[in-house]
Image (cartoon, rainbow, N blue to C red; front, side, top):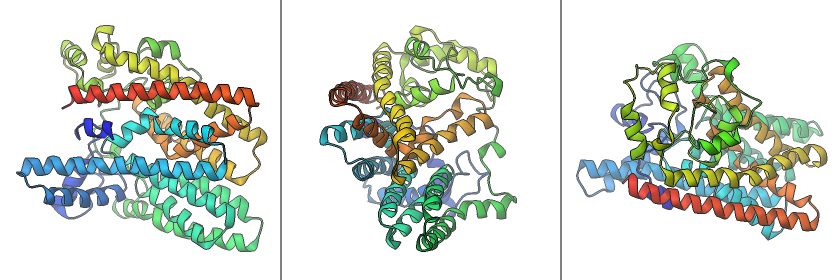
Length: 445
C-alpha cells in the first residue's frame, strides 16, 4: 500500500493509459496497430476504462484533477490484484502442503515481499491482474483435483481462460492446467467428461483475442513489433548466440546493481535481478535519480530508435551515475534473495524425487511453463527487455509451495535453521522495500 501511494501513476513499465484513452474516445476496442500496447488482450482495459470513468466522474476538481484521480484509481487495480493474489497463494499453500504456522508464514512472506510483486502491485499494469486470474485458476484446479466436482471445473476453466484475456502468456496457465487434468482424467469416464467440459469452457473464453486477430489480420497472433518501429530492436545482446543461458553473474550484479553491459547478456542474472530489485531501472528508480539524469545528459544524442552503440554507451555507466542510497538497497536485496531462491529451487527438485500428489505436479508444471515464457521471448527477440521476471509471476503461488515443500523435508534442526535464515532475509528485503518507498516519496512526487 505504501509503495502504491508513493509511486505516481506515470511510473510504469508500459503506458497502458493510452489504450484506455483510445477506448474512451472511440467507444470501442482499439486495433492492435493503433498504439504500442493496443495489441494486448482486452479484459484489463475494459475493467480499467470503467474504473477510470467512475473515478473521474467522482472527482470534484478541474479536468487535470479528474485525470489524476482517474489514473490513480486505475493504478489501484494492480494494488487490489496484488493483495488478492496473496490471499489465494495462502489458500493454495494450505491445501497443497499443510505446513506448520512458522513455515507457512515464512513461505508466504517470500511472496509477499518479493520486490517484483511489490512493483507490479504498485503500478498501472495488466500483469498484476493476469497473475491474479492465473493464481485463482490454480486454486480452482487444486480444489478440482481433490473432488472433481462440477463447480471446480467451472472455476478452474473460467479463470484459466480469463488469464488469456488479460495477457497472451496466460496460455501457459491453460496449457499447464490442461495437461495435468488430462493425465488425471484418463483414470475414469466421469473425469473424462468433466475434462472435456473444462477444455470447452477454457478455450471458448480464451479464444476471443485470437479470433479477432484472425478476422482483422488473417493470423491468430500479432504484437506491437508487427506495426510500430521497435525501440527494443537494437538492444543488447542483440543476437541469440550472444545470450548466455548458462551463466549467473552474481559478483557483477553486486558491483553493478542496475542493468550494465557486464551482465545484460546473462539470462539468469536478468531474471533473478528483476525478481529482487528494479534491475532495469529505466522506468522506475533510475528514471527519477538526479545522478542518472545527469549521466544521460552527458551522452551524445542517440538515434531513433537507439543503435546498439547507443545502448552500450548508456549501459556502460560509471558508479557516479547511480544513487548510493539505492545501491545499498539493491545489493542487500540481491544477497538476501539467494537463500529464499535456493529453497524454491530445492523444492522444485525435491518434487521430482519425492512428489506423489497431482497437486504438486500441477504446481511444478505451472512453474516450469511460466519460466518458459521469458526463455521463448528471449529466443524470439534476443534483447534484455525480453528477459522479464514479470512473465513468470503467474506462477507466484508455486514459489510459496515449493519453498514449503523443501523446508518440510529437512530434519527438524535443519528445518528450523533454514526458516530462521529465510525469516532474516525477508526482514532485510522488507526494510529495503520501505527504503525504496521513501525514495519514491522524495523523488517522484
